[in-house]
Length: 246
Image 1 (cartoon, helix red, strand yellow):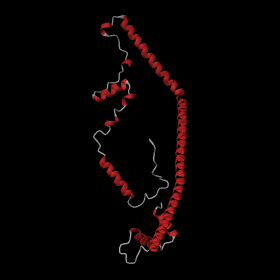
Image 2 (cartoon, rainbow, N blue to C red):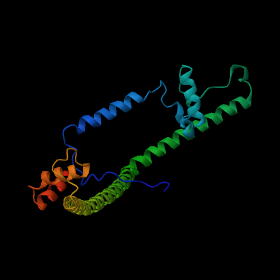
Image 3 (cartoon, helix red, strand yellow):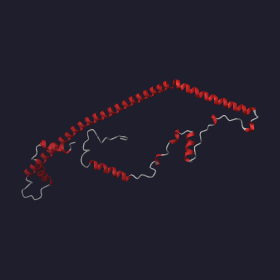
Image 4 (cartoon, rainbow, N blue to C red):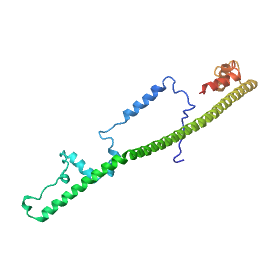
């Protein structure tokens, strides 16, 4: 099925990670992948252009261009704080003096606004800062609650995975024991059939004492029961289970 995910690892019940040679095999696989990976000088060339201009303003772009061109930074303009008189060539013009007076009025108004802001800050800044800190504290508490909820959800997912894998592990072990029992039953059936075949061949007189090259089936009959006749049926089943134990 397209898109089907095959789970071939159950970390909560799988064992053998600490067995000798497992770590070395994993490191060998990592080294093999590193040998096959050939990084280029620009390993991000296939990632496309970096979307760094999405948040750049016109002023920021001009400043970045100035830095790339290694140009000096423009000095801070103090022109709006100056009260220049009319130019020498316009000292006799009333309009020039009117512009100078308007500039002085604007400067005085600006300074008055700054003084008012400082007075308001002295009167209300403490409470405003406390209110701002309360807002920040509320945001911190909210973020901590969200973080705690996410950790609970992660823990719940992990517990569910562990519960599911543990239940699956018990079922797998039961199926494995059942499989080992069926293998032992098949072995007993095969041994009984071979013994019956041997007895049938002997009854027909097809097996004589002077035969030099017995059939392959007869050789299996001779070897297989002799190998395991000394073991009980429970020992045979236990041996098969140990072969596929965790």
